[in-house]
Length: 194
Image (cartoon, rainbow, N blue to C red; front, side):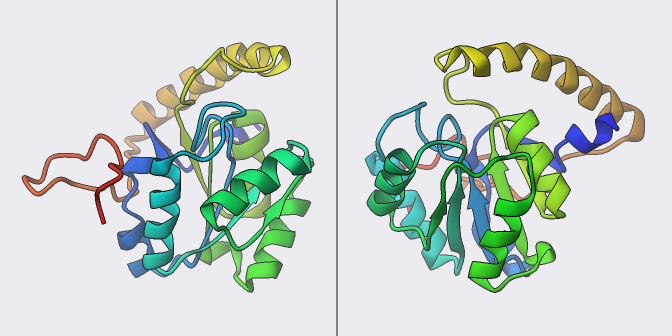
């Protein structure tokens, strides 16, 4: 049962994932959480986020935000970055919003990636819908609503079990990461990059 809470991939940040390579692997849709995944909790889209979504479009991705937040927050962010849609008050981890997003984008689970920072909503929901679940470290852990902070402590227990499972089973991160010209792992998505 705890395996349902394990992400398929776990990386430091959404900004180091090589989405161009993922597009070449047949992925067509990117579903994502907003708060603490792309920007600070409650923050508007910044220049980096706007540039990032232009990069995703150049890579050929369709994008939809799936958030448990209210519509004004989700709509504002998605309008700023230019997504193909959004789903607010999504009820994650229930898979309904994930299925609705895939239907809107005319894709199936094998063509879809979900990226989020919370295990009990984002990862569990993505796993329930059959899409590739990618967990990223929260941008600012503990600068969130009290109920989310409490869940973070439980997430730490799941992450310990996940790391033990990864070590025991020899699993490694297979998701392609962006690289600098000197072939070192890219540490962040810079505004000036293509």
